[in-house]
Length: 412
Length: 117
Image 1: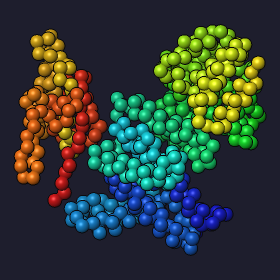
Image 2 (image 1 turned 30 degrees about the horizontal axis):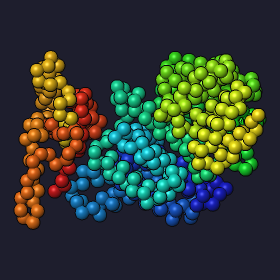
Image 3 (image 1 turned 90 degrees about the vertical axis):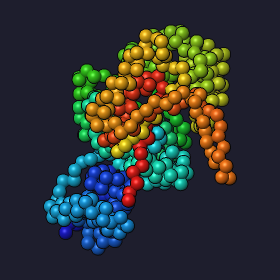
């Protein structure tokens, strides 16, 4: 019997369950054909593990034990089913699988890719895709998912139940999409992973913070399962390079520190190195997409010894390239900021000024904050103050308002 | 699984009779129907008369009440349907995308309930 690692049995069990949840559940869905049923049986198996592992110690391959036990629980559930005879074919298949003595040492088939494509199916709302992915692949509890998205647990539970019903009822397949659809479907999956990352990255809440770790784990899993997809590698590199800066982004009071003022010694060099190496390999393939470009921009910042030494010319041209693929306000603003350093503030003002009343910009706080900073550096104090006021009126985050207030007070 | 593909479009959109586009549009339907029949996916499919011909029926206190026109006063109206046997939702979506009106209107794809007995 293996020794328990130096932690309580409950902790050891929790760790195994958290780490293996996605892989076990994905394999179970494959054999049971239904996410809800697979989840129920896995919960049964986990409850059983909690009962006996503290006495017996962890089995050699905890994941295999959980999957075998979950399958036996599935058989029990089917036997109790009122429509038992109609389900005998399903049952005999399961009994075959569960009886197989080799199962304890079996390499669990990796069906996580099938699972993530099902969870991120375009016929599901994106918020539902995110919640399902966190629940099924990351093993987060409904309560944690609800907290991370500031939802009521009951509403989140309802959303998850409806989603699983739709998957079963509408016949959303459990498979890797055909080559012809793969690119668009991968894009949807990456959008979900990046959304999870940003949700964790943009807030201070510790429960949300764990979302960046989940997103990184998902990114690594996806890269392992789809090693030939450049944008999958691109997103992983981007998340690594961004996450490398997370400690340096907040001061002790929790206020945001802009990139310009961050202590670069606090950046996580290991993550930067990993992200950089991954990006270099990927860019060689020549299938450049938005995530790779954003990673390249992040990599230039990460590799620069100071704000003043930043290679703004290259960053400006990368933003211009990104804008051709993603013509969004945020990219347009970042491009102008890069131009303000690479060329001049007047050229940046020419790029931004006329957007003042444009529908996507008029009420967009980052636009006014960027304009304020550029006007200030241009020496136009009056317009800078005006833009800071506008930006402050559009933010609901007190830390951010204080930051903008400080910038405005420092004018002239 | 069977999927009901409900074909919605605003009346007057898409190729109209008498225009050069109408012939190819209708041929698109003939070809799609033939393709579905040949592949064995076609369970049923029909086009409906315009909404001007619609009557809505409801029974209140045992009394049949009829009103002129469609039930839902939306811009996009049900113009026809295909009932298709498909492997899964992805298959159904791929077929629905081939229905000529998909280019001008929308196709609502609804799985048909299979009752266990």
